[in-house]
Image (cartoon, rainbow over all chains, first blue to last red):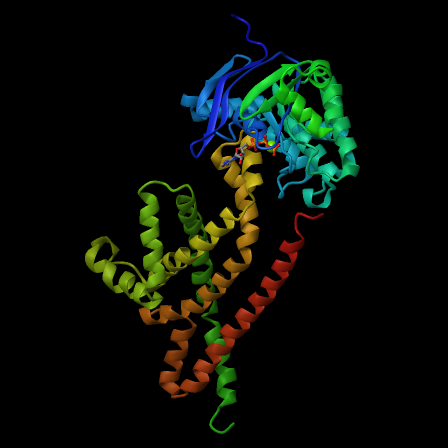
Length: 248
Length: 224
Ligand SMILES: Nc1ncnc2c1ncn2[C@@H]1O[C@H](COP(=O)(O)OP(=O)(O)OP(=O)(O)O)[C@@H](O)[C@H]1O
Ligand SMILES: [Mg+2]
């Protein structure tokens, strides 16, 4: 195969203290594709996303993003930095830099990682602040923002990287219900820009609406995957059925 | 108060204060070097740099476990004996060296604790956007750790200013040395040393005031 667009993951495995958490995950993501991962708690959904960004170090497997291919078992520092620059991460708890304003949070990746000149980075950051609807909060520190605003900045910071793959780990789970809508709305807008997205969420309605493909994970494996209509309306595997039944 | 010559005390004040710049010089230079050294020691401990980590542990243990006065004597009188190129070391240099090493051992521990105290999410967020370790430390972790450690570091600075008085034992004429000399001529030891005590007290009170202001500012920082 000579195709280098898109993302592929092969045999990704991860254990914590001898307990296998990810058990040989295989995954192919086409450019612009939006994939939602669902599954019970403790199943390894976060771990999968964190391994793709090397926040957790997988023991085995290959991760290919575009023309960059990283062998997890032998990943060098350079590999890891290169992979992180091609995958951006949106955290459940926002994890904004507490000592930086909203604008600086977004500029950080541009100036430090992409080596963009200060003035250009500032223009770009202000444009992103416009897109996330927070132009008036450019100079506010995270502590003074609402949860929804913080998570929008979190998404803006990830957008700044212009990564080939954006990873979202339950971006709305820590939010008060009143802020969930605005964050999902922003994610829809990101999707509309043909951004490739891998999203872990418990928002099933949103998953059905945004996903090209839904993956059901359990026990560190992919149990079933398919278009939302299949997974939600006609799940094949009994474990998927059981999980969806218990959600009600 | 019978026997207390207040006029003498007043006349002596300006004489002693002439030596205040030297006291402050030793304290500020010592503090500057100690901050740099302590940060390096703390980072070595945090990344568990092999071998260096063990050496730092011994270093910290020694400089916390022995009196500053003994350390100063070791540098001033002892070192030139074993390292001949140090024959020219003067009392001020030896004092600054001693203060730097002694206080960096204490400060390294509070800087280390402050760095470790920065929330894990901050480290992960920095990693996730592809920062290198040193970018992450300089731009995200150390500024936040600085806020956590600042009040404690000011305490060490206050302690360091008072400790400069030990330089007198190395023949340095700072405030304490000057008071000793004056008193040796006038036999007014009580007045002379009371003057010195009052000067230190005022300096420390000023610093404590600034420290409270600093803490108030730090507490509301990042919250605009
Ligand atoms: N750093 C770690 N050290 C040890 N065990 C861990 C660590 N991180 C995760 N685990 C374990 O790995 C398993 C999978 O965790 P993970 O967070 O990936 O699950 P999840 O599918 O995201 O669950 P949830 O829906 O609750 O977020 C859990 O049993 C968890 O306890
Ligand atoms: Mg999770």
